[in-house]
Length: 455
Figure 1 (cartoon, rainbow, N blue to C red):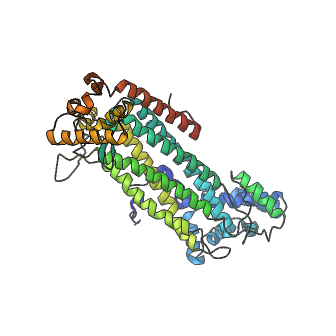
Figure 2 (figure 1 turned 90 degrees about the horizontal axis):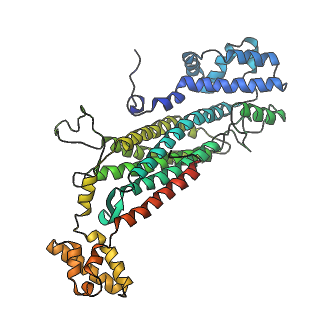
């Protein structure tokens, strides 16, 4: 009886579109493709018989027998040796030319690069979709007035579209960094045991270049028995930075969904249950999932940094780490992207409560506008700050409105007409400036990702 899944990535969190690239079947198919491609090039360059390359190439077209390879590995205790033995047994006398002049990591690192490019393309696609949705939401909410908070305290009037704009720019920059890191991961390696082409000789350099080009990869300037692991670490770190940006977005939504704030809510479907005990609950569970996954991924990044440091021309301590890290990071990051995209698309925005919250401080949120007006009219900054601070304290004590209290203050009434006090906050002027910021963000983000974000 097959064992049931143990890891939640197999049944709860993993993105199937990504995880299919990290199955044993896909891994072995890719490894065989690398062996086949190298054999074909070696045959063309006269390093192995042309007939041997043809036989190996024909065998590579067949469906891979994963269980047969695993049985051989149980004997050899070596995955690539088992794979090579599997190919050799099925290629007759010419099977001895499989893996000619190669070492295990020629196959592992090169197949890793191929798989990572395929999975990375899906990450970039999901990421671009998210950027477009964020930009769209920014424009849709360019006049949605709300509260800006610093230190968790009401600061000044704000526009909800600016939150989406900040996220658009952050995620766009992450897109560019990940794309660049994926390109750095486009290196393969076909240079033998410690990277010297010892068995293939000078032709080995051409074998590597041609074979990697056929596989859609680049030739590295140098490798030891493995490619330098800073390439792997950089990609994973960029993934984790993106994951943390998604955590930031989720945390903001979670905070704004608090009962006391109630400015946004995740969509809640008819049959959904918020709590088994409290029927009234509507919890931001999707954002909480995104934040929780980010904690896991941040921890994973450390192991990839440690993989940069290996003994001499290589040791095997990186291998087990990478077997665990790649499916988890790719699968979980994609899960985050799919989840947060759905949250943003369906986000319920409570504009009425945003206005209500804006007035919780009885107008004190406009204090800087009054401060600046006093400075314009000749009052020193220190004196102006003292006056407005005293007015704010009085508002807190008396629960009167900020502008009502201000117009009764002698220092204010002597300098500013009541009508001018009321007109200090001109929303239309404010909105015009905000729209320019949002359009600037979209323009800069389009330059970064190299694609149009809005129609």
